[in-house]
Image (tube, rainbow, N blue to C red):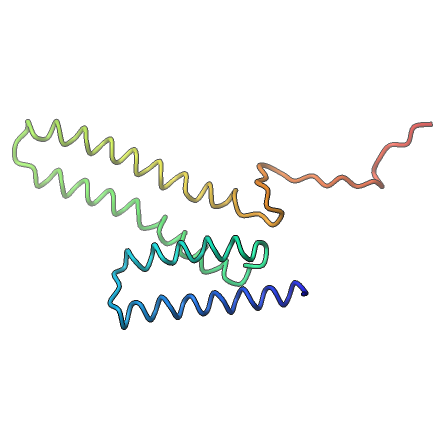
Length: 145
């Protein structure tokens, strides 16, 4: 089967999965978290099944990843500001402040490592490549005389 056929099949399967997610939203009243987790699982399965033939649906994943990354930092900032302004006692502020800093650092680590891993892991050959890929071309070999 040709590469173009695999691309079209991958696009068709992705479209069917989008329809399933829309059905779950409208008919089964599935929550946002459930649909996001299912979409993530579908994306992983689709990526593994059609390795290298997911360029058409990769744009949707990139847009989603960039949107989540852009929303997380302001969301964390305003949630921290809101929790600090709602505290009345200064003793509670100390214990809650330590927990807040811990969870903020944990959240920041997840937010920074997730796009980094997503940019490194998807590859066409099934192997993870860090840095530049070098092709070994026999025409550039030095001849020994």
